[in-house]
Image (cartoon, rainbow, N blue to C red):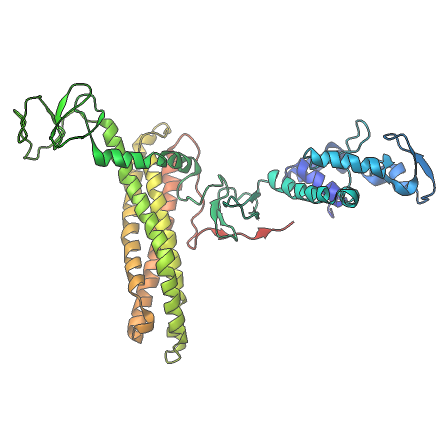
Length: 470
C-alpha cells in the first residue's frame, strides 16, 4: 500500500494477481505503475473523474441501471471505477458472488475489470447478510493461503484451524504447529526428514501391506518349484503345493510323495547346507529385505515414542528435584543439560527411524540413476551405512546414560561426570545426524535422475511455527 500508494483492497488484488510474490511486482514495475495495476484489474480513483468527484448531496436522485429505479444519492454506492448503483443491487451482487465462492468481486458494470472495495462489500453484506460478511472475510484469508506458496493450513486431524507461514524460499522445510503437529511444508505429510517427500509417499503406500508381508514370512514357506507361498494346515512335515510339488516343511526342499509320519523317503535335512548357486525365490527375498528395513524403522520409532512419553516426564521431575536442592551449588543445580540431551535423543531416534526408509528405496534399484551413477553408489552407500551404524551406537549410549541419570540422588562428582558424558554424547549424535543429512543430500540424491531434496537438519527438531492470524 505504501510503496504504490494504493488502497488495501487494491494491494490485495495486485498481490493475488502475482501469487503474493513481491519479486513479481518489482519485475512488472518496468511496465509502469498504471499499466501494472490495470493488468491486475485495478482502477485508481484519482484516474476516474466521476468516482473522484463523488456527490455529497444525498437528496439528489440518480437512475440505477440494474433495478431501473430512481434512487436518492444517499443510498447509492460508487466504486473506484466510477460506476454507481443502488445499495440494494450492490448487496445482492455481493451476496451472489460470495455464495458462488468468489474471493474477488468485480464491478457490476458490463466488461468493467475493476474489483470492488472490500470495505464496501463487508459493510453492505454486514447490514443484511452478516453470515455472508463473515464468509467473505474467511475467503480473503483463504486467498492468501491458497495462492501463497509460503502459507498453508496445518494438516492436523481433527484440524486445528491454524494457518502456518514460513519464509520465502523455504518450501523444503519442516515446521511444528502450535497444536503440536510437526509436518513437512512441501508435501504436508508428517515430518519425515532425512527422507525425501517422493520416497516417503512410496513408503506409506507400501506400509499398508506390511502386516500381510510379516504374516506371510512368519507362517508360510515358498514352493521350490513355482515359488508360491504355502501354508501348512496339518501335522505332517510333508506338504504338497497346488502345482503338485511336494516339499519338506522343515527345510523347504523339494521331495517325493513317499513318506511316513517320521520320515520322507530319500530326504534328510538335519544337516545345515549352504544355498549358494541354488535357484532363489526372489519374491521371498524381497519380503525379507522389506522386513529388515521395516523392523528397524519401527523399532527406532517405538524407542522415540517410549522415551518421549516415559523418559521425558521422568527427567523433568529429576531436574525439578535437583533445582530444589539448595544444598548444591548453583552450577550443579542447573539441569538444563538433561533436557537438551533428551531433546537431541528424541530427534536422533526419528532420524534413525526414517533413515531406514530412505535406505530401503535408495539401495533397492527401483530409483533411476544418472548415467554413471551406479559406479558412485557403492562408495556413497558404505559412507551412509557407516554413519548410520555409528549414530545407532551413540544414540543407544545416550539413551542408557539419560535413563540412569538420577541426578537428584547422585553426589556432586557423579553429577558433574554424568553432565560431561551427556553433553559430549549429545554433541556427537548431533554431528553424526548432520553428516548423514549431508551424505544423503550431497552424495546420494545427486545420483538420481529425479531431482529430490530433504529438509535441513534441525538438532532441536522442526522449527516452531507461529500461528498466522487474519
